[in-house]
Length: 558
Image 1 (tube, helix red, strand yellow):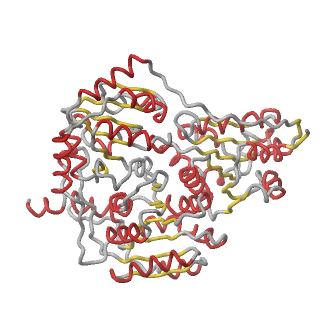
Image 2 (cartoon, rainbow, N blue to C red):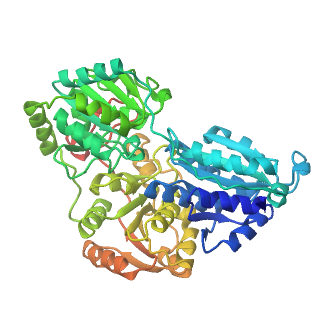
Image 3 (cartoon, rainbow, N blue to C red):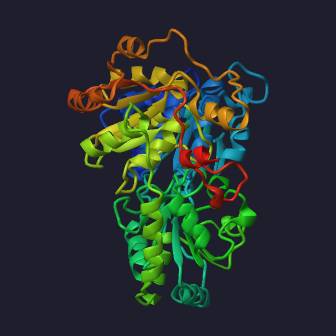
């Protein structure tokens, strides 16, 4: 059948099972938006307040649902406003297709109004970028973009379409897309070697990253932990891959990881890394990371093997499929004395906070208690992000969404909107700092426009908390440009943007406010006023080995 380019774009989205698009229209993409208008009963469009919000919303939708997120923007500044969201998705391996339109083909390269080489701009932060200049290439390109975005190690793909292609006409034939197959790139010899190493270990430790969530390998990870009789820690991106309430769980590893995880990994004789990339925030000083251990690394991306940490054995492949082949080769182990040692570390070094005042850990703990750990949590970046990782007990995958790799302030609100749209039956909280909230607070207007019942929790200490913490500990308390104690009233801002707002200034107000926000069934802001010098502990100084993890008690003893 004959269709114009814009109708082909919509038809291809429907082919791929897309039910929601986040975006913002403009001149070059008008034809696509006109086609979208005609199919609004089949594909929902969420108009964000800013293109960056659209990219973050598509990202949150993808992480929460496991589907490919889709965002749209016009040429020039519309397209460049997507860049931070695309980079965020790239660093965290999020499947995303960003569709932009460009000026007519004869005007490319002539500094035309709102022309930008967005494919060139985003080349380093996408799995692939396309610019479609011929109507006959349009449908195959969109299909290829979705396949690339969700295959192997997922990531964002850009499809830029010249405006004349969106108006041109050609034949279109629908295609039923096939799901990408799970693959492994190792042989039986490699598998046997790893199985033998695991069975010989006396003090094994499992370190779980975001790849376990991407591959839906939670059940297989738990099975391996039980077979190996091993403790389990996770990265920021791996939250929820292993049940945070399981007795084997020791907490997060790394710069703000628990002492039990950091010291346990330092003492282990075998570290099994599952879908993790040995980030600098995990390893600290790489030369002293797990020095006494052999390391096995399982990951879908061969480029990650030996990139940051030299390993003794590796398996390259989809984690779920790999563990389904590895687990049957593991004989049931018993490491009673090792698990006793881990329990001693957990008992000796629990996470703790000052219970005599209103703090972020208390607020997070209350959200966990009131929701029975069943909420979906997104975060921005900073102290509140670490507290959200530490004090909410994530028991299911795809319930903690955060910018781990890029560390994007302003990510959480858009991501929370996308997550809530993708999972409307869930209670969705965004935990934000006041510095992060200032960056994309305009997306509250998006939430109120569609009555998306997110709960925006602003941890308001009137400073850039994490930067101030570093300035306190390492920069002689020189608080250069980190004090935000001005006249901005977040409750009034939220109300002006159409949301309900509640201010919290003491502990006894927390539970009623959370319950009221959940019951409201509309977007709610909780402005939580905490002290400016609360700090995230434990902590490992940048570049130090994780064995040098310290907390507030250690500082007082020094």
